[in-house]
Length: 245
Ligand code: NAI
Image 1 (cartoon, rainbow, N blue to C red):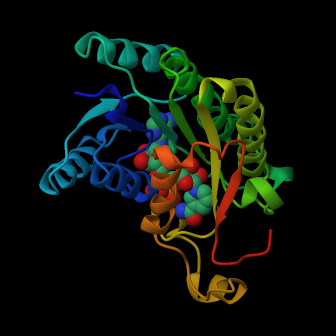
Image 2 (cartoon, rainbow, N blue to C red):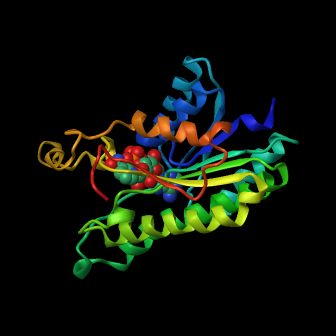
C-alpha cells in the first residue's frame, strides 16, 4: 500500500476526533485511531470506518506518556516495514476549568501535558519519516480559547495558545521539506467536551446562531490533510460560526 495513505488521529474515539477519522477514511486514508482508555468507543469508530468501506487500526496510548507513544509507534513501524505515517492530527485534549485563584497544580499540569507534551511526543515520533519522505501534514486542533483566551480556562487557553505558537515555529522549521503544519481553532462544537455548556444561552453570542458540528471541523482537517493544501503552512484557521476572535 502507498505509504501516503496512513493518517494518525489522536483522541480519535469520539467527538471531533471521530469525525476526523471518518472524513479521512472517506478520502481513502487508512486511519490509525488513537485513544487512551475507552476500548468500546474506539472499536465503534473502527467499525464505522470499515462499514463505510475504509480500513484502519486502533493505537492505544496516552499522548502525554512519551514512552507509551514511542512504543506504540515503534510497534506500528515494525508491523509495516517500509511504510510511514504522513498525516498526523493532534486532536487529543481536554478541559479542566477553574478560576486561576482556585487553580490546582494538577489542573494546570494535566491540561498543559496532554496538549503540549502530547503534541511534542507524537509529532517528534512521526516527523523524521515525513522529512525524509519529503511529504507530511501535521494538523493541530487548537481552540478559540488559544486565540482570545476564555475566563475560567487560563490553563486550557495557555495550552492552546502554546500549541498555536508551536505550530507557527515548526511550520517555518520544516516548510522546505514539504511538510506543512497548521492549526484549526474550533469555537463551540457540540461534543462530550461541551455537553455541560448551555447552548441556548451561548448561541446568542455566535453569529451563526448555533454550535458547530464535529463534521464541520473535520471537513477543514480533510482539506489540510490533502495534497491540495501544500502551500498553506503555519496558519491558524477558525471554525467558529463567525465568533469574533
Ligand atoms: P472530546 O472530549 O469528545 O474528545 C477528546 C478526545 O481526546 C477523547 O477521545 C479523549 O479520550 C482524548 N484524549 C484526552 N486526553 C488524551 C490523552 N492523554 N491521550 C489520548 N487521548 C486523549 O472532545 P472534542 O470536543 O472532540 O475535542 C477534540 C479536540 O478539539 C480537543 O483538543 C479540544 O480541546 C478541541 N476543541 C474542542 C472544542 C469544542 O467545542 N468541542 C472547541 C475547541 C477546541
